Image 1 (cartoon, helix red, strand yellow):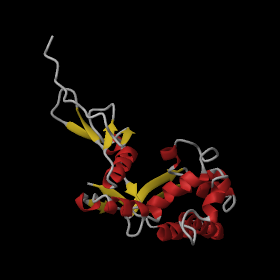
Image 2 (tube, one colour):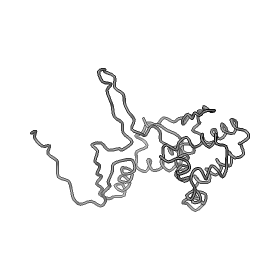
Image 3 (tube, rainbow, N blue to C red):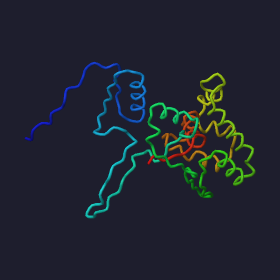
Length: 222
């Protein structure tokens, strides 16, 4: 048997222990540490970062190596004034990042549509209105509702529209504004990120994710 690797002693006195070194765990630990607390971060993997890291795989029998991005191919909410940008500025992480901003967020295809979806919400709204003029009023109402959900209340905290969306599924939210299944399908393209179909996905959760891209900017961290 080979010699066992020696592991240094670990202090047993901590103000906070964070289990999991993913994006949420690292962000929480960094904020706690910057507030003056002694923080221990534990993770079962040999690398920290969770979905933020990548891994290489060589094609068998060749010299070709592919680099697999685990999940974080896009991130949102990094535009000026947005919450996540402010958090990364507070943690002094933002100056270390090299960001590429997308003008097109994603592509959506169906039996009767093939659209390059703009990252900018106003351009996305215009695209849908121009593509489906008979449904333009409903599209504008939907986007107006999304802006209300995204905006904080006058005194801070979540808006009344955000609280109202917590009692709705994504399908419920869409049905309030648009009955056209084509537009509902296009708008719901990102449901796979949440892992639930529109009839089961939380309207608030979907709106929050959608807004982070289309109101908060769509970026790639190089």
